[in-house]
Length: 363
Image 1 (cartoon, rainbow, N blue to C red):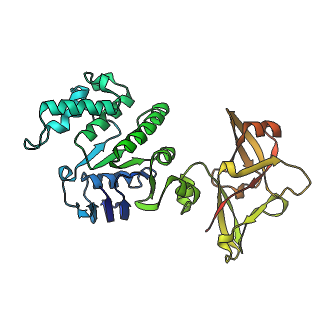
Image 2 (image 1 turned 30 degrees about the vertical axis):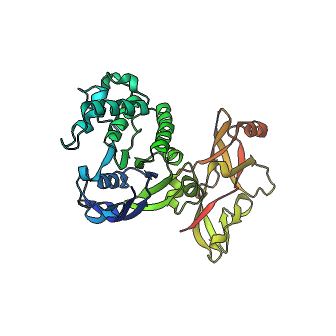
Image 3 (image 1 turned 60 degrees about the horizontal axis):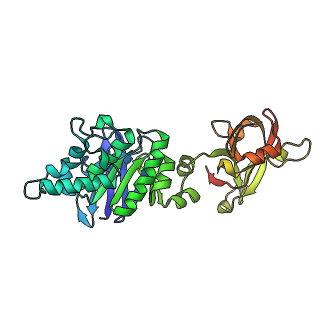
């Protein structure tokens, strides 16, 4: 089932949760709604489900206006962050619940329910736990049971609200891979809400970046990572350094003289001496030892801390000119542990930092 969201707005008192949101989701697609807390992603999910009513706008399922449909008429499955399993029911009865609650005319027989529940428990690889109760399960197992229960009623749309948010990092990673494989098998149109960038980029077919009730960018994980549409998207997707400077006729200047750096910014070829800022990923920074009094053509900084874990070295650097970096002051750089060892850098030493690649925005 395809979903079309048209000009959807929602206010809670004076707080504008959603502002004229437009979005199209293809049939069989797995889409992530990604953004910080309060950006409107859960509100949008609940409006799609029919658990919340939009103040303005429409929701269309496969071209049919479903704005006024109640939850049951929409035929959606919903998985919450905190499982929402019935504690007094066994795993089997939890999964069977939706089927047993169907109107008598469409309710399957107990033998059909039994067969279907065991098939679903097999699908989520937990058939051997059918007689246990939620309290006897791990967090990851509970979430898989919650997903089996949502799938039992054969929903046309599967909605997941921070489905792995309450789990530890290792279990979360395992379930992400498992959810992707399950979706590839079932091809049910699915939307999941997350504030975890890695989760969205790893699992989804497309990512919808949301901020302050609006959609900032929609694209494949590779598209939003490689071509961020706004400073918000660039800053939200992964670690990033922010540098202040000036843009002039296709060139960005950070700092002055030998303790500064200039690089091409062709997208701003017509800009005349304007305040600008550049976003640079930690792995896109070149770090080398400072050599006085020669021109260094870079940003002078002190190596405050080096964190070498496994194959990666993460460096925390304090620029000598504090006005060049963002509000955190610290510049983060990344290189291989081997490169760091070959440079022989020590904490407290002065280095020179040069961006290899940057995205420039004019203020």
